[in-house]
Image 1 (cartoon, rainbow, N blue to C red):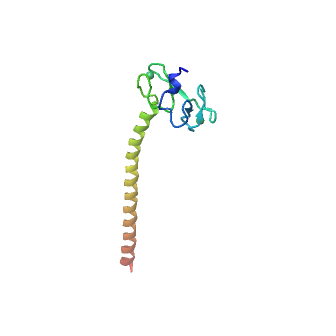
Image 2: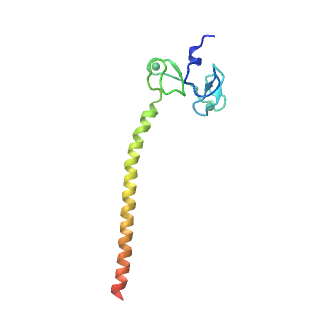
Length: 114
Ligand SMILES: [Zn+2]
Ligand SMILES: [Zn+2]
């Protein structure tokens, strides 16, 4: 009758009262601590205030603190990847240039020796 944690919105798609799994989005019955299908944890405890939040939500419903640190950490490797991708393009461009030069030398060399 009075369970504000389960009935709080932002639990993902599914019938009212069920807790959607963050991994496989399987709707679990209220009160379940782990997913019935993949056995993954449905709730995450806030490191700041200790409130229990559904894993599907990005922020704590009590103190609004970000629950998943990996979201912020995933942003940095993306920036590093774009730099490495630029280097790949440079390498490909250099390789193509060398190849073009090699072809030019081969053709001109043949003409000189002929
Ligand atoms: Zn699951
Ligand atoms: Zn919190």
